[in-house]
Image (tube, rainbow, N blue to C red; front, side, top):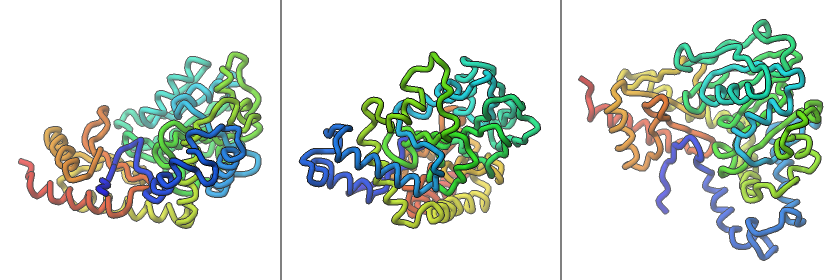
Length: 361
């Protein structure tokens, strides 16, 4: 078996033990005589899978009882519309723009009401997280929206903003399950699964119960969180196989010690890369240190041609998908939960070798 180190920002690496378990159960799941991909979502066998998945996620994230867990389709991008449709009671919402996805969420919300950008880091190409204080939040805003970790730019909120009594809504797509988060500090958490949780096709929404039931009358039924909550995420056929895969990932994380252990593991991996970047002058890490992401590490040589050569040669050595996003260029190493420490060490070894063989003039 010739497995590479896949640094893709998503869909991303899945844990090898999870893939091996899924492979062993692919054709016949336990005693059912069929694959999970074939079984009815109304069958007892599948209801056991989705119930266990929710139970494991609640345990992992210490989700309070007054929050609903929804397993949905459409990706996190669909939630850019679902958030204002479900929460814009007075027609006002405040957004913090710290990258491309939070900007897209803000633009989408403007279709449904008075969505205002209260803070932005675009002035420095999103290399930091703007400060969010209660003073800049409108007192009559229905919610405040943030993107906790910015996949493209490699930034992360160093702390959860204090929004007082106004619900905080957060896109956690690229950092969910990477470390513990106090769920009670959020009104809603949503996350696409294809970075740290499962294959593409599943989106998890964790919503406080008091925020359900206020969707606009013209909200499409598939975007109404209360409808989905009332039907146990099965108003229609859910992304069955992705939910099964998520369950296996939850089991894997718990077997390693849960989110506290995962945080330590991720801190060690990120330190290998950031320590090297800080100790040399061939590559530059553009993100300001207090806001560095553990999940997505961006760096450049300062020469676009060298950057292209780096990505091409890294690919040839089994360090895949290292090229930065087209909007920022350079390189990006996405080192999600499933990336082993050996992968990060192999990348650093290649970075040293490349710098020696390609001197800058």
